[in-house]
Image 1 (cartoon, rainbow, N blue to C red):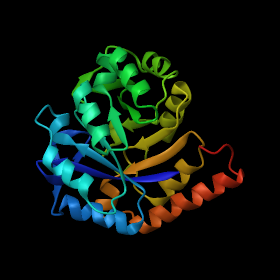
Image 2: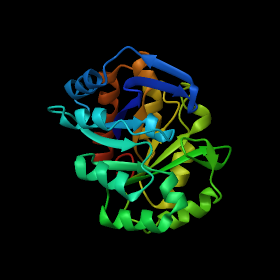
Image 3: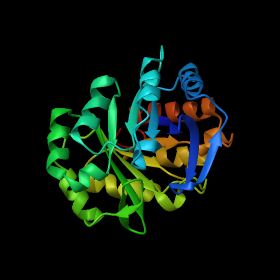
Length: 253
């Protein structure tokens, strides 16, 4: 069970959106590099970076992303946002991001996505951003033509790192994550699930940790707003990992 603190970037600033809407943006007066250093000092193993400029179809924040990658003693980084062609995915993985989080490319060109998944085994994360039972694309602005069930069936045979399951209606709400959906889609994809959207308390993390399908949780707003203490959250996840390791809570993810 891994805690993945979010680092959402818009115009070079640290932000959080509400249900993916750019008009709902909250901008935090924090330097992205300092946030990353804070994560590193606390013992974070992996941070979840999102380039929102690229997600909304604007030029990617390459200079800032390169600075994050060059940060000394940084945690592992996974990158999402605007990775919609071979060049962008290859750039991210070849420059030092451990994993690439992908939605639109996966749906629009599954053949290329499959090729990349096999070229970079265990380094792609399939992002399943869900709203009203539909899969959303392009920064959550479009609906996919395929059903969630069709997409999950196609993903089963690929060497993915994980699937990232976001319930858009809970994103930024601090209303609790949709763990049941993450477990359902994890089983359907035969892949470990990362749960995202709505995590608001240590109890949310404890509940997620009881499900062997869930390998980790992405947390953003609750950390930025102080609803969750980072050190305490890391301790909860570490305890969950130790418990799973003993076998007393079922199969380890």
